Image 1 (cartoon, rainbow, N blue to C red):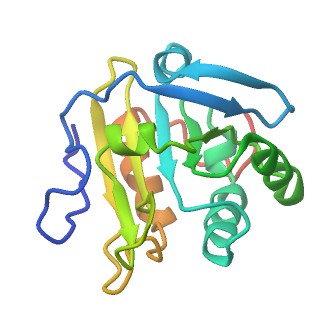
Image 2: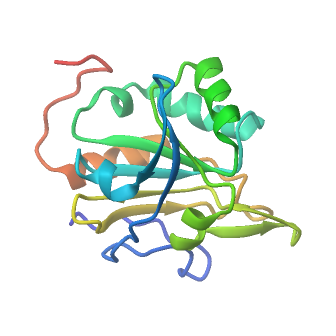
Length: 187
């Protein structure tokens, strides 16, 4: 392991690097419109997953986050990794979100926050509303967490913006082998 890890206040938020991710799953909305009940292990059978938790579709912060991943290009074009979102939004709202933003990433509908709780990133916004703390976990094929970033905004950790450049560097280091920058284009 390259040893990348974001440290949050207290250092105990979410699964730690090196821990085994639970084999949770739920309703997955794919960019092609398919909607299936999919366990995380099924996605990991294809390739490592960067699981990105966020609060909900169409909020300004979440639109910025997903446009950043989309516009970075590498996250959508590198065949060694699959980026998957997780939020409380329903499957039908996810479908509209994917279409509106032209996202190439599947999104889990985690309305009961089961996936969120399993990864240890449930948060009560202002002590009231339960939702996912903005966070990203790189999980390899053996379900080992290889990298994590957990939001630590001083007022509300759901407002923290994932550092896409840092995540890119960490994921590339963890995946090993440099296929070279392709600037968002497939080889």
